[in-house]
Length: 307
Image 1: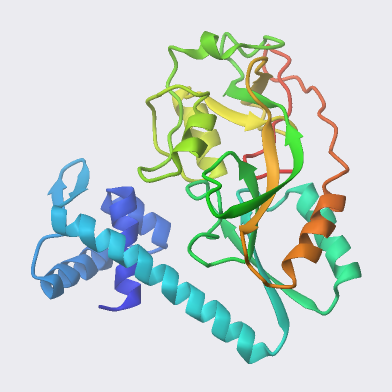
Image 2 (image 1 turned 135 degrees about the vertical axis):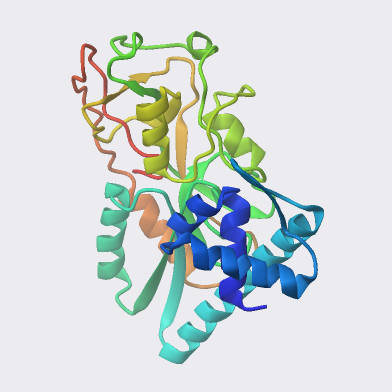
Protein backbone atom coordinates (compact mmCIF):
# COMPACT_ATOMS: atom_id res chain seq x y z
CA UNK A 1 0.00 0.00 0.00
CA UNK A 2 1.36 3.41 -0.93
CA UNK A 3 1.24 6.18 1.66
CA UNK A 4 -0.41 8.46 -0.89
CA UNK A 5 -3.24 5.97 -1.40
CA UNK A 6 -3.69 5.64 2.35
CA UNK A 7 -3.97 9.44 2.61
CA UNK A 8 -6.68 9.30 -0.05
CA UNK A 9 -8.48 6.60 1.90
CA UNK A 10 -8.32 8.53 5.19
CA UNK A 11 -9.72 11.64 3.50
CA UNK A 12 -12.70 9.71 2.12
CA UNK A 13 -13.23 7.94 5.46
CA UNK A 14 -13.26 11.25 7.34
CA UNK A 15 -15.43 13.11 4.84
CA UNK A 16 -17.69 10.12 4.07
CA UNK A 17 -18.11 11.62 0.63
CA UNK A 18 -15.90 11.25 -2.46
CA UNK A 19 -16.62 14.76 -3.73
CA UNK A 20 -15.71 16.48 -0.45
CA UNK A 21 -12.64 14.29 -0.07
CA UNK A 22 -11.49 15.18 -3.59
CA UNK A 23 -11.90 18.88 -2.81
CA UNK A 24 -9.92 18.45 0.42
CA UNK A 25 -7.15 16.65 -1.49
CA UNK A 26 -7.14 19.25 -4.30
CA UNK A 27 -7.81 16.64 -6.95
CA UNK A 28 -10.71 15.57 -9.16
CA UNK A 29 -13.07 12.80 -8.10
CA UNK A 30 -12.49 10.14 -10.83
CA UNK A 31 -8.81 9.43 -10.01
CA UNK A 32 -9.70 9.38 -6.30
CA UNK A 33 -12.41 6.80 -6.92
CA UNK A 34 -10.03 4.69 -9.00
CA UNK A 35 -7.37 4.82 -6.28
CA UNK A 36 -9.84 3.61 -3.65
CA UNK A 37 -11.01 0.81 -5.96
CA UNK A 38 -7.38 -0.30 -6.43
CA UNK A 39 -6.90 -0.22 -2.66
CA UNK A 40 -9.99 -2.37 -2.18
CA UNK A 41 -8.49 -4.77 -4.69
CA UNK A 42 -5.26 -4.95 -2.69
CA UNK A 43 -7.13 -5.50 0.56
CA UNK A 44 -9.50 -8.01 -1.01
CA UNK A 45 -12.60 -6.44 0.53
CA UNK A 46 -14.87 -3.44 0.21
CA UNK A 47 -13.85 -0.50 2.37
CA UNK A 48 -16.96 1.63 1.81
CA UNK A 49 -20.65 1.13 1.25
CA UNK A 50 -21.61 3.58 -1.49
CA UNK A 51 -24.93 5.43 -1.63
CA UNK A 52 -26.26 8.45 -3.57
CA UNK A 53 -25.70 10.72 -0.55
CA UNK A 54 -22.19 9.55 0.37
CA UNK A 55 -20.39 6.53 1.80
CA UNK A 56 -20.09 4.65 5.08
CA UNK A 57 -17.20 2.54 6.29
CA UNK A 58 -17.45 -1.23 6.24
CA UNK A 59 -16.03 -3.14 9.24
CA UNK A 60 -12.88 -3.76 7.18
CA UNK A 61 -12.70 -0.05 6.35
CA UNK A 62 -12.97 0.88 10.03
CA UNK A 63 -10.00 -1.34 10.88
CA UNK A 64 -7.95 0.05 8.00
CA UNK A 65 -8.76 3.64 9.04
CA UNK A 66 -7.30 3.10 12.51
CA UNK A 67 -4.18 1.44 11.14
CA UNK A 68 -3.76 3.95 8.31
CA UNK A 69 -3.87 6.90 10.70
CA UNK A 70 -1.19 5.31 12.87
CA UNK A 71 0.98 4.53 9.84
CA UNK A 72 0.66 8.03 8.37
CA UNK A 73 1.43 9.64 11.73
CA UNK A 74 4.54 7.47 12.01
CA UNK A 75 5.61 8.41 8.49
CA UNK A 76 5.26 12.10 9.37
CA UNK A 77 7.36 11.61 12.51
CA UNK A 78 10.08 9.87 10.51
CA UNK A 79 10.10 12.62 7.91
CA UNK A 80 10.38 15.35 10.55
CA UNK A 81 13.15 13.66 12.53
CA UNK A 82 15.21 12.76 9.47
CA UNK A 83 14.87 16.28 8.09
CA UNK A 84 16.03 17.74 11.40
CA UNK A 85 18.99 15.38 11.58
CA UNK A 86 20.00 16.19 8.02
CA UNK A 87 19.98 19.92 8.67
CA UNK A 88 22.19 19.59 11.74
CA UNK A 89 20.27 22.41 13.43
CA UNK A 90 18.64 22.51 16.86
CA UNK A 91 14.99 22.10 15.91
CA UNK A 92 11.76 22.42 17.88
CA UNK A 93 8.49 21.39 16.23
CA UNK A 94 5.54 23.49 17.41
CA UNK A 95 1.91 22.63 16.79
CA UNK A 96 -0.49 25.56 16.38
CA UNK A 97 -4.25 25.17 16.49
CA UNK A 98 -6.47 26.95 14.03
CA UNK A 99 -5.69 30.54 13.10
CA UNK A 100 -2.17 31.46 11.99
CA UNK A 101 -2.92 35.19 12.39
CA UNK A 102 -2.86 34.92 16.19
CA UNK A 103 -1.10 38.08 17.49
CA UNK A 104 0.19 36.13 20.49
CA UNK A 105 2.01 33.79 18.12
CA UNK A 106 3.46 36.77 16.27
CA UNK A 107 4.79 38.25 19.53
CA UNK A 108 6.20 34.86 20.51
CA UNK A 109 7.93 34.45 17.15
CA UNK A 110 9.59 37.85 17.49
CA UNK A 111 10.69 37.12 21.08
CA UNK A 112 12.00 33.70 20.12
CA UNK A 113 14.08 35.07 17.24
CA UNK A 114 15.68 37.53 19.63
CA UNK A 115 16.30 35.16 22.54
CA UNK A 116 17.06 31.86 20.73
CA UNK A 117 18.28 32.70 17.21
CA UNK A 118 20.10 29.38 16.85
CA UNK A 119 16.96 27.26 17.29
CA UNK A 120 15.04 26.37 14.14
CA UNK A 121 11.26 26.31 14.67
CA UNK A 122 9.13 24.00 12.56
CA UNK A 123 5.41 24.79 12.58
CA UNK A 124 2.65 22.22 12.22
CA UNK A 125 -0.65 24.04 11.70
CA UNK A 126 -3.58 21.78 12.59
CA UNK A 127 -7.35 21.84 12.35
CA UNK A 128 -9.83 21.70 15.23
CA UNK A 129 -10.12 17.91 15.42
CA UNK A 130 -7.01 17.45 17.58
CA UNK A 131 -6.58 20.04 20.35
CA UNK A 132 -3.07 18.71 21.10
CA UNK A 133 -1.97 19.42 17.50
CA UNK A 134 -0.36 16.01 17.02
CA UNK A 135 1.45 16.01 20.38
CA UNK A 136 0.28 12.54 21.47
CA UNK A 137 1.22 11.10 18.09
CA UNK A 138 4.74 12.51 18.41
CA UNK A 139 4.30 14.87 15.49
CA UNK A 140 5.23 17.95 17.54
CA UNK A 141 7.37 18.72 20.57
CA UNK A 142 5.01 21.33 22.01
CA UNK A 143 1.59 22.71 21.14
CA UNK A 144 0.08 26.19 21.39
CA UNK A 145 -3.61 25.46 21.70
CA UNK A 146 -6.73 25.84 23.80
CA UNK A 147 -7.98 23.75 26.71
CA UNK A 148 -9.87 21.76 27.86
CA UNK A 149 -8.80 18.34 26.61
CA UNK A 150 -7.57 15.09 28.14
CA UNK A 151 -4.37 16.10 29.95
CA UNK A 152 -3.24 12.57 30.84
CA UNK A 153 0.58 12.36 30.62
CA UNK A 154 0.74 15.98 29.46
CA UNK A 155 2.09 19.13 31.12
CA UNK A 156 -0.02 22.23 30.56
CA UNK A 157 0.96 25.87 31.09
CA UNK A 158 -1.88 28.42 30.90
CA UNK A 159 -0.82 31.47 28.90
CA UNK A 160 -4.05 33.47 29.06
CA UNK A 161 -7.83 33.13 29.37
CA UNK A 162 -10.39 34.63 26.97
CA UNK A 163 -14.13 35.24 27.38
CA UNK A 164 -16.30 33.30 24.95
CA UNK A 165 -19.32 34.31 22.89
CA UNK A 166 -21.80 32.74 20.50
CA UNK A 167 -21.39 33.46 16.79
CA UNK A 168 -24.67 34.18 15.03
CA UNK A 169 -25.84 35.53 11.72
CA UNK A 170 -26.09 39.31 11.95
CA UNK A 171 -29.81 39.10 11.16
CA UNK A 172 -30.46 36.55 13.91
CA UNK A 173 -33.01 37.82 16.48
CA UNK A 174 -30.46 37.25 19.25
CA UNK A 175 -27.61 39.09 17.53
CA UNK A 176 -28.53 42.45 19.03
CA UNK A 177 -28.26 41.29 22.63
CA UNK A 178 -25.47 42.51 24.92
CA UNK A 179 -25.19 39.05 26.47
CA UNK A 180 -26.76 35.60 26.37
CA UNK A 181 -26.98 32.54 28.59
CA UNK A 182 -26.39 29.02 27.28
CA UNK A 183 -29.97 28.03 28.12
CA UNK A 184 -31.24 30.57 25.58
CA UNK A 185 -29.53 28.56 22.82
CA UNK A 186 -30.97 25.18 23.79
CA UNK A 187 -33.11 24.73 20.70
CA UNK A 188 -30.39 25.57 18.18
CA UNK A 189 -28.12 23.32 16.11
CA UNK A 190 -24.43 23.51 17.07
CA UNK A 191 -21.39 22.62 15.01
CA UNK A 192 -19.79 19.29 15.85
CA UNK A 193 -16.30 17.82 15.50
CA UNK A 194 -15.76 14.42 13.83
CA UNK A 195 -16.20 11.15 15.76
CA UNK A 196 -13.14 10.33 17.83
CA UNK A 197 -12.44 13.96 18.75
CA UNK A 198 -11.43 14.48 22.40
CA UNK A 199 -14.77 14.42 24.32
CA UNK A 200 -13.71 17.15 26.79
CA UNK A 201 -12.87 19.42 23.85
CA UNK A 202 -16.16 18.67 22.08
CA UNK A 203 -18.19 19.16 25.26
CA UNK A 204 -16.64 22.57 25.94
CA UNK A 205 -17.45 23.93 22.47
CA UNK A 206 -20.96 22.50 22.83
CA UNK A 207 -21.56 24.46 26.04
CA UNK A 208 -21.43 21.32 28.18
CA UNK A 209 -24.53 19.69 26.67
CA UNK A 210 -25.10 17.01 23.99
CA UNK A 211 -25.90 18.78 20.71
CA UNK A 212 -26.64 18.00 17.09
CA UNK A 213 -25.41 19.78 13.99
CA UNK A 214 -23.01 19.74 11.03
CA UNK A 215 -19.47 18.40 11.36
CA UNK A 216 -16.62 20.90 10.97
CA UNK A 217 -12.86 20.67 11.11
CA UNK A 218 -11.53 24.20 10.57
CA UNK A 219 -12.23 27.72 11.80
CA UNK A 220 -13.56 28.87 8.43
CA UNK A 221 -15.89 25.88 8.29
CA UNK A 222 -17.32 26.93 11.67
CA UNK A 223 -18.06 30.41 10.38
CA UNK A 224 -19.52 29.11 7.13
CA UNK A 225 -22.01 26.75 8.79
CA UNK A 226 -23.22 29.67 10.91
CA UNK A 227 -23.56 31.84 7.80
CA UNK A 228 -25.25 29.26 5.61
CA UNK A 229 -27.26 27.24 8.11
CA UNK A 230 -27.78 29.51 11.10
CA UNK A 231 -25.86 26.98 13.20
CA UNK A 232 -24.63 28.05 16.62
CA UNK A 233 -20.87 28.37 16.95
CA UNK A 234 -18.84 29.42 19.97
CA UNK A 235 -15.67 31.47 19.69
CA UNK A 236 -13.34 33.44 21.98
CA UNK A 237 -13.99 37.17 21.83
CA UNK A 238 -11.45 39.33 20.06
CA UNK A 239 -11.14 38.97 16.29
CA UNK A 240 -13.07 40.75 13.55
CA UNK A 241 -15.90 38.86 11.91
CA UNK A 242 -17.38 39.30 8.43
CA UNK A 243 -20.22 41.87 8.48
CA UNK A 244 -22.75 39.06 7.98
CA UNK A 245 -21.88 37.60 11.39
CA UNK A 246 -21.94 38.84 14.98
CA UNK A 247 -20.79 37.41 18.30
CA UNK A 248 -22.67 37.92 21.56
CA UNK A 249 -20.84 37.30 24.88
CA UNK A 250 -22.02 34.31 26.90
CA UNK A 251 -22.45 35.27 30.54
CA UNK A 252 -22.32 31.72 31.96
CA UNK A 253 -19.65 30.15 29.71
CA UNK A 254 -16.29 29.33 31.32
CA UNK A 255 -13.46 31.26 29.66
CA UNK A 256 -11.25 29.63 27.06
CA UNK A 257 -7.70 28.91 28.21
CA UNK A 258 -4.82 29.48 25.77
CA UNK A 259 -2.14 26.96 26.77
CA UNK A 260 1.26 25.59 25.95
CA UNK A 261 1.32 21.81 26.34
CA UNK A 262 4.01 19.15 26.04
CA UNK A 263 4.51 15.51 26.97
CA UNK A 264 5.31 15.08 30.65
CA UNK A 265 8.84 13.77 31.08
CA UNK A 266 10.05 15.01 27.69
CA UNK A 267 13.73 15.86 28.22
CA UNK A 268 14.09 18.03 25.13
CA UNK A 269 16.12 20.99 26.48
CA UNK A 270 14.46 23.39 24.00
CA UNK A 271 10.97 23.04 25.48
CA UNK A 272 11.30 24.89 28.79
CA UNK A 273 12.98 28.01 27.35
CA UNK A 274 10.30 28.11 24.66
CA UNK A 275 7.54 27.88 27.27
CA UNK A 276 9.11 30.67 29.31
CA UNK A 277 9.28 32.88 26.23
CA UNK A 278 5.67 32.03 25.37
CA UNK A 279 4.51 32.90 28.88
CA UNK A 280 6.04 36.36 28.59
CA UNK A 281 4.80 36.91 25.01
CA UNK A 282 1.19 36.04 25.84
CA UNK A 283 1.14 38.31 28.87
CA UNK A 284 -0.04 41.23 26.71
CA UNK A 285 -3.65 40.54 25.67
CA UNK A 286 -5.33 42.21 22.72
CA UNK A 287 -8.26 44.36 23.96
CA UNK A 288 -11.75 43.21 23.01
CA UNK A 289 -13.67 45.94 21.18
CA UNK A 290 -17.35 46.08 20.38
CA UNK A 291 -18.29 46.25 16.74
CA UNK A 292 -21.66 46.81 15.08
CA UNK A 293 -23.08 44.07 12.84
CA UNK A 294 -26.44 44.18 11.13
CA UNK A 295 -29.12 45.49 13.47
CA UNK A 296 -27.26 44.36 16.61
CA UNK A 297 -24.14 45.53 18.36
CA UNK A 298 -22.09 42.35 18.07
CA UNK A 299 -18.51 41.98 19.18
CA UNK A 300 -15.29 40.81 17.73
CA UNK A 301 -14.49 37.11 17.99
CA UNK A 302 -11.22 35.27 18.02
CA UNK A 303 -11.02 32.00 16.20
CA UNK A 304 -10.61 28.88 18.31
CA UNK A 305 -6.88 28.93 17.87
CA UNK A 306 -6.39 32.66 18.27
CA UNK A 307 -4.59 34.87 20.74
